Length: 229
Image 1 (cartoon, rainbow, N blue to C red):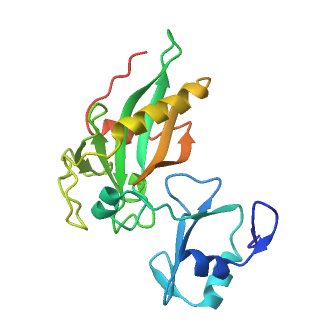
Image 2 (cartoon, rainbow, N blue to C red):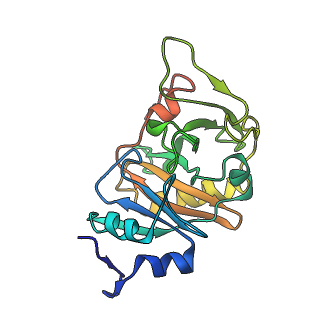
């Protein structure tokens, strides 16, 4: 109902939060594909996604929101920030559980990168890019869009907005990320099929969420996929 309530039940002022944090993400709890996500930043101006607004406009817009999560900005790893600094650039790791052994395994992995079109999110549905991750090495393929006309897929070795290289970039600490995600998956192995959204950081990674309906086209746009269980 437009009111911001902390975990301990206290009412908070958004502008006070912005003065301390500089930026926050507002995400609807019941949405998907990046729809409804808002990036609010405060420096010399208040920026609501791409638009500069006044304090009065900020409060007016937030008063109309309901059932949103207010989240801090995660400081992503340097390699990811270099490729595209404006969005989270999440990694989607698809885990499944072997029905014979009950041991989880990684079936596919992809790295999403935001674009000026998709901002403030990196979702492909909004115009972001997906690069396939070599599960063994952690190296990225060239990046693709999941929506294109005709039969010709446009491939990007470099990011179309930043001009930074994507293809062949290796994700730091990839072996650790894999082991940690599989460890978590094993602890909740009663969930047989999870699309993990994570943000690599310079010190590890942050799990944003696990999806029970992961977006398979993130992986299949790169090559035909056959998962055998």
